[in-house]
Image 1 (cartoon, rainbow over the protein chains, first blue to last red):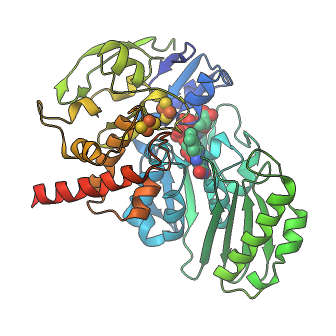
Image 2 (image 1 turned 30 degrees about the vertical axis):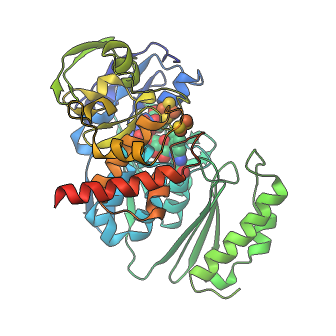
Length: 264
Length: 163
Ligand SMILES: Cc1cc2nc3c(=O)[nH]c(=O)nc-3n(C[C@H](O)[C@H](O)[C@H](O)COP(=O)(O)OP(=O)(O)OC[C@H]3O[C@@H](n4cnc5c(N)ncnc54)[C@H](O)[C@@H]3O)c2cc1C
Ligand code: FES
Ligand code: FES
């Protein structure tokens, strides 16, 4: 068995205590489904972990204004099973029910998924299409930013030193049509296409590039699948060549457009 | 703000209250195997992918290879050793035996614990649901078909037992 490199564990019970602790070397720790793996592989060697799981205020799912706020400690399973999410954000619940495998879903959090910014994320693509925002706190105060601006590139986010994500706010738009289609042959998706439309349409191509790629149009019918497939950034890997992945993008964008009732 | 190096934890393991002092870097798999001799917990990929290390914590399946022992304080941990009653195998175990759902057996404790979780959530799963539930469990011997039959068989046995 590989052993975890040595570290020291902090267990704050309030957000204020946690904010005092975190810095570049004292990393936040939630489910550990990314962090502990990266530590075992020697890719990350934090000397301290700040366990956020003792902070009760980060566990809630609640209605907030015209949206739903999902606390930073909420796991994929808890969110997907939560009556508010099932009722108001059924499309998101369906996406979360297909993340990774049941153990990853039972332990991993949505916030941890966004903060790690692994490019092959269903969660980021879906939340961007839904217009989700990340709620951020630091000792100085709070701010919010679109998930689209938060996830900058592979393993890179807009989170600054000393900041923590406290939750994710997803707007509820009753007239919104939403579709998520993914192609997956290993434990992470090769491609995920999220599309949402009401008076305007956003389509997000996830997992094939270094970061989710967003395309906007007045309606789904205005999206051109073959033009999108030509334009997207594609990273070839063991799950497919560039040519193959571009082909997948075209097929899946066409299907997503059709799922939203667009023509093509 | 020095942080902890070791923690004292009090999990309930297979129904028994247990108090242990563990280094914070110790994984749950290491604790279960090396401290408690529960060798039904296997370790292989150490990346949450293969499922041989699956145990239930408060009824939820976790990959004990990459889960801190420290996080089980005050929680219920169930391993494959906690299923049988004396010499009587649990209906899920018996179904795996009767359906020849194992050859080398290395993956079996993981599949059995995942089955326990599935049937608690969904007592009569269809084939597709079973296959999807095993997205994170690999078996290199059986070809999966007998495992799926064993789950369906176990669902029937547990249903009858429950009614
Ligand atoms: C085998 C496997 C398969 C997977 N398959 C998929 C898939 O199909 N689709 C998909 O979308 N994802 C997939 N994932 C990713 C999974 O969703 C994430 O691992 C999980 O959600 C991360 O959450 P966590 O709580 O475990 O994060 P942790 O591992 O605890 O933390 C991850 C990172 O985020 C930081 N962090 C955590 N919480 C906060 C916070 N509140 N504020 C600031 N920083 C924070 C940590 O410091 C760390 O850098 C898979 C993962 C695995 C291991
Ligand atoms: S050893 Fe834990 S999932 Fe493979
Ligand atoms: S029985 Fe050998 S790996 Fe499954």
